[in-house]
Image (cartoon, rainbow, N blue to C red; front, side, top):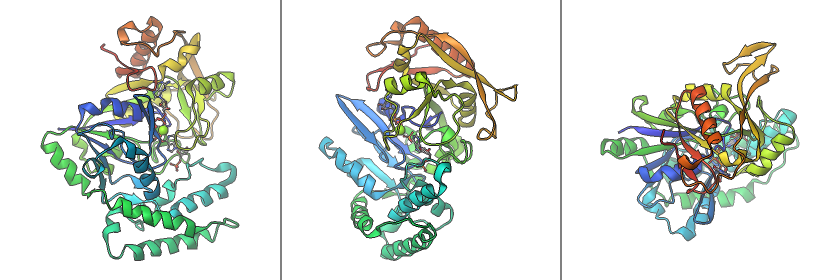
Length: 424
Ligand code: GDP
Ligand code: IMO
Ligand code: MG
């Protein structure tokens, strides 16, 4: 068996959580491979809305195992908070939620370092979620990190103290940055005890065995391709590989074991935090998308920046990830417009540009748009793609031709049920 991958093609928040939940009945295992509590994945069904940060989005389906892979960074306090919120739903965590021993831990001081670094950067800040993601991955690659497997060691407290001391030594250099570590440490150490109750596994072996037994695995991405540490709009990115290749390193899956790659995108585009966004709309139209789409961060509540879909960026993301099929999200939000714009290419210094440029941060990009007819009607009650308005089908067909990948799913609302399958 091969591992299917589902990931975001834009700047995150494409609707990954919803589609993972919709697809989970087809799988035996859902595995997160990177990121951490910077992610906020929203699921809606039976009148409930859930936001998951670390726990994979297959958790609401019984008989499916959810695995937090080695590429993920875990804040035990946030993780415990997620478990507590799920308590009323009687989920059998002990048998259905596994954590890789090799996943790294976010310490309270990682969060402090994130905050200190962002404050020091002033107007140049990344706009990080302040969850300690960057400093934790820095310690991982710097070979200083603490891993889930370490919490069972008798030397854990010693290792923890040594790393905290190192961090305190760095924090001293941030002039005027004040903090109270003691109040953060108590809950963190208590949450470690909770973490110990869950099965810690060698997830690479676990997955290999599962695949050899014919089990079906879906890898759930976090963030989006344009936030990838290598291929995103650096330095305004996150600190992990959010692309398909991240599945291999974040779960211990060989590249030859990757199956379908499902790329998720919004029918328009959003970004939260700083950094370039060529099709951003700073006018009333952008406001309308934000209002209609309720574009506010699931993790931080920050307003998301909004704009039209960008095919230069999308083609780049499809190339990097080897996307085999697409899911288009939030089509219902565009119902308010008579016409819809699609950026087909850029103009830079008067030259036509179709490859996503290296110096996107520094050059002036003029997006060139094609205008398509809108559908101007409510989609949220649609029960099948066949019954969708022709203008929506034309939009889908246009994007399929431009991107050269089939759009198999069209989402018309946040609920599990508001999901249409394109039979074409
Ligand atoms: P993720 O991080 O990729 O899982 O996405 P988020 O959960 O951060 O953001 C997506 C938001 O859009 C959530 O509030 C979802 O409930 C919502 N959503 C997902 N699909 C649709 C859709 O097709 N229509 C509408 N109106 N909302 C959607
Ligand atoms: P999901 O999985 C949208 C953004 C932050 C910031 C940059 C770096 O819900 O799609 P970090 O805290 O990772 O150091 O922040 O990345 N960012 C996200 N934006 N969705 C996310 O996750 C994000 N995770 C990080 O806003 O610009
Ligand atoms: Mg999100």
